[in-house]
Length: 119
Image (cartoon, rainbow, N blue to C red; front, top):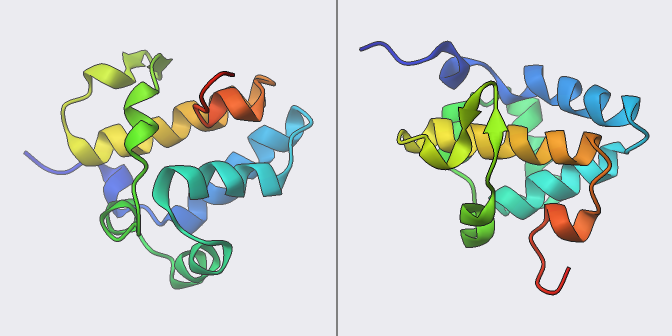
């Protein structure tokens, strides 16, 4: 079976869409970057390097410095699919990020988005 085309799509081509979605709802680029960093472990400098290199989604997640173990707490539906039910690991990571951006755009508190204890 062929890979989904999102795997070969550059992360940099979708990144502005994440920012636009968040900004339409009064959130900021810095908050989008914070969410991405929480999920992947990329520092701001590393994230900018990945964007500049036009890294595809599959590589972006495969090379992530520190995938957050708390991401398993991310639950819910994205594009009509429950993220916790997605079996393919890379697609699940992509959908985790989509879900986090959705939560940010919906005005959820950052502590809740980042799955901090006692939030």
